Amino acid sequence: MTVLDRPAEFEGFGDVVADAQWADEVRRLAKERNATILAHNYQLPEIQDIADHVGDSLALSRIAADAAEGTIVFCGVHFMAETAKILSPAKTVLIPDQRAGCSLADSITADDLRAWKADYPDAVVVSYVNTTAAVKALTDICCTSSNAVEVVASIPADKTVLFCPDQFLGAHVRRMTGRDNLHIWAGECHVHAGINGDELADQARSHPDAELFVHPECGCATSALYLAGEGAVPDDRVKILSTGGMLDAARATTAKQVLVATEIGMLHQLRRAAPETEFLAVNDRASCPYMKMITPAALLRCLRDGADEVNVDEDVAAAARLSVQRMIGIGQPGGGE
Ligand code: SF4
Image (cartoon, rainbow, N blue to C red):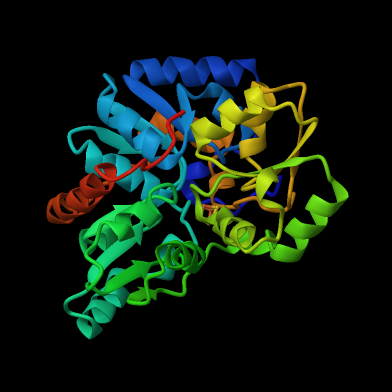
């Protein structure tokens, strides 16, 4: 694995390997801090294996809010830790490396959204959860990929809708709702660029008996969601699933091979759930470098030093909480674990 340029505070952790001693120390420090460790599905396998809970960003934020522990160690990217903080403002939320960003969340800033709203003052703003707290605070309703269509459908047909930041999810929503007063921000996740239509169709052709699982919870697979809907792969072989649904489908499948269109970290949980089935990545280069910044060394430093702490301004958090809570009330906002 590539060693990233680390800031000074990471010095002394360079030789950390995820062995039994590391695992013992992580568990000991987590107990000492009264911390629960949450890991997103796209984390490194060793981080997933040490975590108390593994799941998608929304499921993890709900677990964070319900946790008895006062400290949440969020092994994921920054906007996810912010969402956990928004939903549990009284808790300490730590991310092992605050530089773990998200190219999709970064594709729209609060200033961008303010300017866009000024062009459409009566519009309703719908934002995918992959956005910063500041963008969520300017949003009317957040959505996940699981309930994006229902969120938009819940808005009166004569209202203009601004949808951000994911252009593929936006195009999918426009197709499903038939809505022409839906404006879409041209943002994208760079990881999904590797999961393109040709690759998807080629893989489906060369594995004619394989099922295709698409987990669109993170922006990396929204292009696959869009392409599957365009007929790049026969309908009956495509399953668009939340994390929980994907794990259930993995346990239930009779297919010998399953093609998985998402970030490759998800393969770890699937292989654990169904060791008899062969899970193949549609694109084995679809790996999110931000997710992989949460290394064993970063987790150890986080627990030892109580860093990096994630804080969200109270007013921003209050406004953002409203848009997240509206999302939770509509449809099936996302898969639990
Ligand atoms: S996979 Fe894409 S959308 Fe998900 S965290 Fe990484 S950059 Fe963001």
